[in-house]
Length: 91
Image (cartoon, rainbow, N blue to C red; front, side, top):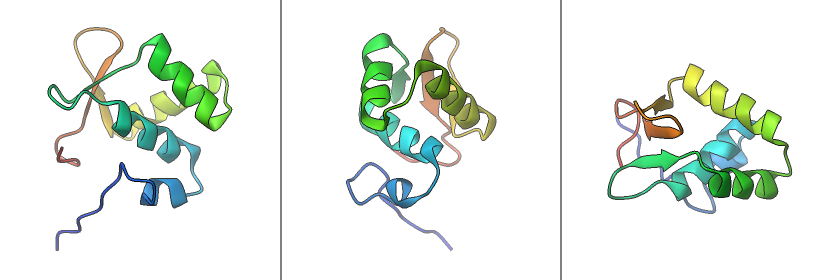
């Protein structure tokens, strides 16, 4: 069975979850460059996430590490660049 869910909309299941890591993922999905499918973990993107969720940089880094551990995002060769795991997500 295939389930289709839009994860980047206001009513996203990610925002309904009681897991801040999924809320971070929701914001990342909205920050991804649509052409390349890459999320740039730069100061501007991180600041937006921290402000939206009222978290510190240390907490954000823990959530990003959790997303990497869960293999939801995969680090690119270049530091600070991530792609969604294409086995799980379809952009």
